[in-house]
Structure formats: structure tokens, C-alpha cells
Image (tube, rainbow over all chains, first blue to last red; front, side):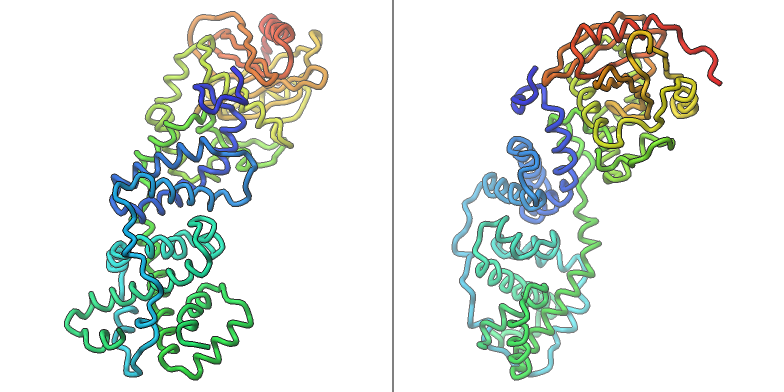
Length: 193
Length: 280
């Protein structure tokens, strides 16, 4: 047995496994959180997480990185994209929409009321309805509490793209919550578009 | 500043990602642009709503225990049930329950690691206790070496540090379900250094530490009902040697960087030394 070369053998390198256990396993819950938000279906998230952890173990390089959490989240994300059966839908990736953001009415803001009252269940539903491209940056920021720089590292997107997708994600989320809350009061809301 | 820029920077501002210069520019724009001011307020409300909902959402998204156990089982982690070195308290001469090391891991992880080992601590214990030391599985060897390596980190080797076996043995009283053997091996050239409680493959064990020249030897002991076996030393790779035997209902696992002949000598010296009969 020679542990140093045993990553693929039945006899693991104890020191390496120890480091993996100490450095990577504490982020298992974060990895699950991301897998769950990306896949949305528990069964798929299971597969993503299991495959991601195997990959993580395979590629783990003791002491090789200072942000193990971001590294693991990147693996989860890549695994998700790999396992995803359907190809990413390019049409969902809109460019930053000036029409939505450039206009606005100066009237009272009934939607503020709904944002104040939005509960966890509504938020979950609204977030899960977001297109993947927006959902992932939003989840990384809001639930995994990643910095913009970490999101850039995890997704491989440019900083400007991360920022615009985050803005779009939150804009859509706010709109979805208000639409859900006042289905018949689309007037002032649609005036923004 | 254009509204389109402002609508991006509002988020960076709320996320504390905006530098001072842009913050000033954004503030100036907001002061003159009611629409952007409203958007800032709206996004701020959304952020509040997300923060409020986060605990509930996180709870709903908790990693299922069965999945955690499945993942741990698929990874080759021989030490999955052991406390991590970071979790170990740098104590000496103070009793330390081995389970304390679990505190730094999520309790659920600890629980599921035990689950992997057989459905709970009691079950794991019984199962392992029924094995003899001679069941020299590669996983056990790997874990013994792993534990040895970990124990050599500063201040991890011993909790009770003494060359007096009459001090080491009573120190374990009440901490284990068996009475570990601490023997004077000075005559054979193995110096008693001390002892500690440890967790090996999910069970509480005593670790008695000896030294030969500059080589520390960890001698793990746990209850193992069954017939006696004779020592069998194994080259565990990377310069480590393990040897194991069973004597009088206790399984012994020794590990060090000594070569096999010296480990055999250690095992034989220990087996043939008189058991400590009357702790003070």
C-alpha cells in the first residue's frame, strides 16, 4: 500500500483524507444548499451533490487553495451543469434590460407593502421560478453569502455580468412577489415596463 | 450618472461592494432621481425580506441525514468518525472526553458518521468490540496511521504527560469501559511518555504513548472480547509500521515510524511485561 498514490485505490491516503475531512466536509451543507437551489428537485440535487463530492475528493489538493468553500461551490455548479440533461437555454439570458430599469413612476409604492410582507414560502417559490442564470447569482449572493469576487471565481462570469445578472434577478424577484401578491393590480406595475 | 448605471450600483451598494467614490456618485444621483430612490428603497425592502426568510429557507433546505451518510460512505475517509485536529483542545494534564472533539463538527455530521459505522455508537461499539485485533483490515491500518499522524501535531500527543505509569493508568479511570494497560517498558528501551483518550473508527480508545529514541509510539487499546492473538506487524507505507494483537480481552494497535523488527520488539516487551496490578 502506498497512500501517496492511492486516490483511486481502495486504500486512501490517511493524511489526505484527514485534510479533506477537515477542510472540505465542513462546507457540505453549503454545497447542498447550492445544489438544491440550482436543481430545485431534491432527487436531482442528491445526484449533483454526490457526484460533486466525489469530484471534490478526486481533485482535492491539500493546502492548494485558500478558499475551499468557493472551490467546492464551483464544483457543485459545474457538476450541476454537466448532469443537467437539457442544454442551457440561451434565450433566457437577456442582456441588461434598460427598458425595465430606465423607467419608473413617481406614484405611491403599493408593492413595498408586499415586499414587507413576503414570507419564506413566497420567496422560495419566486426564487425557484427565476431563470437559472439569474437564480444562481442570486443564491450565491443571498444564501451562500458569497462576495462578488467569489461569485466571479465560482461562475467564471465577468464582474459586470455578475452585477447585471444580480440586478436582473432581484428586479424579477421583486416584480414576481408583487405580481403574486396583487394579481389584479398590474396597472402601476406594468407602467414600469 | 445614468439611471442604468445607478440601477446596477444600487445592488453593489446594498451588498457593501461599492467603493467610496461610486457611493458618493450614487448618492448624488439618488438625491436628484426619485425613480432611482424608489428602486433603492424597493431593493432594500427585498433584501430585508430575504434576510428575514433565510432561517426558514435554510431549515427547509437542510441536508437530509440519509444523503449525508450516503456521501460519507462513498468517500474514502477512514477518519470520518474521528475528531478533526482543529477540533482538539490543546490541553495537557486535563481530562478530555473524546467526544468533545465533535463539537466543532455539526452535530448532524457526527451523528451520520456514526450511522455509517453501523447505526449508532452502541451498535458500532458492539460490532467493533466483537472483532479481534487480528482483523487487520486495510481501513483499520489506515486509520491507525491517520490517528498517529494527527496525534503528532503540537500538543496533541498526550493529555496526561508523565513517565509514571501509576499516574497514567488512574487518569483513565471512569473514562472508558475497560481498564487500559500501562506497563513499564524502560528495561526494553521504550519510555512511557503519557496517554490520552482518543476516538478510533468510532469507538473510544485509550492511547498510551511510548518513545524509542526520537520515535513516538502510539499504542491504542480497546475492549475486544475474544481469544488472544500474537502480534503481526505490517508496513503501512510512508514509513509507518503498525502492529496489532489481542491479549486478555484488549485489542492493541501500535503505530510508529520504527521498523518492523523494533515494533515486534515493542509488542513482545509489552505482552511479556507484568500487568500493573495495583494502581495507587
